Image (cartoon, rainbow, N blue to C red; front, side):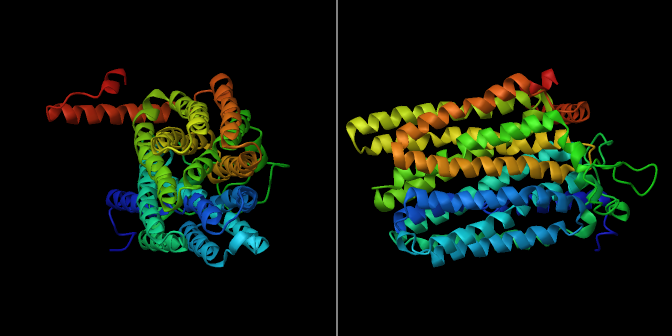
Length: 489
């Protein structure tokens, strides 16, 4: 059955189901690979890189990602080849991950070449988050984003946890020659491509993907007869009138300069930057704390750092999807932001104890358990930043551009954080590094608490409340107790 002859409701349900499977396999690929952290541990423990050498590589990776992120968003707003662009980005980043393991020389002997590989990989991966979320909004519409982004994030984190578990077990079995663990990246890429090919051209409304269509009060159903992009790239960045539309009744996209004049967006960009500036390097430092001087067991434990965090990120994403559409974005976002200073304070105290008593398996297990807080913080942030960006970009026709800006802020924040953290760890020690990062992490929390307004729209709040009441009614019919939030909705 062709896409055009298929019932629109069934087509939309099918496309959403395929999207969740794409997200499952894309989790390990979507932001330059969670395996980036495994690569850092691999280079330091197996290839004898210093922390600064690893830090330089991933600084360049993040810088390239930052520079490419906003142009990638602009491209996605206008392209009707979103599926093809996302596929090409996934294949490229997979090949570059494998190349990292294959070509890395001991003691950073070919460091310049490795830096070049990371620069190319960073630029390529800029297409992944904007591509996935643009396709998502094109399938479900702006008012369907809360539930679908939550589902995407849950599947992302679940997929990452499974892949990293496999990689960690391979690394433990192969130690110290652990380069073969990166075979899991092609496996994830193959699964993602298999399902991504099942998204048909008629499944995506490209104007809804841009954020132009915000008038409907419920999740959209694509009308494949009218899903082409209105207009083509105008390169009118704001020094003139609005971008022209095809007719007088259609919505108009704001120019990039108009988007950048929004003070709420600029504030949120600053919050994204400062959060990742403080949080981006905490996970690699925890992994290195456990991996250094612990041999194969340390590599296995560093892998479990990711697995524990990703498992709790699934729960965090579920909570965000269930409650942020009813109670609003701000409370949950603040919870995620505050988890970082708490986590860093605990790590500082644990390393002070470790310095006093020496190596201890029990202490290592307690340090490992702090990754639960990473699952809370990064899990909430990963879901909520997409939703808040969608709230801010609603009606502008520049959703992917706006998402590119906020993701770019995250990229450069994480980039600077990566080098800063590695330099601090090498120069003054891991305990002092965690202390400084914990103090820095208070900045985004204070900014969000004092200056950031609630961004959830009345339309989506009403839709979420209605969906919540429908779920409660179904539960009552089955004799199950009502969810507590239903009484408030």
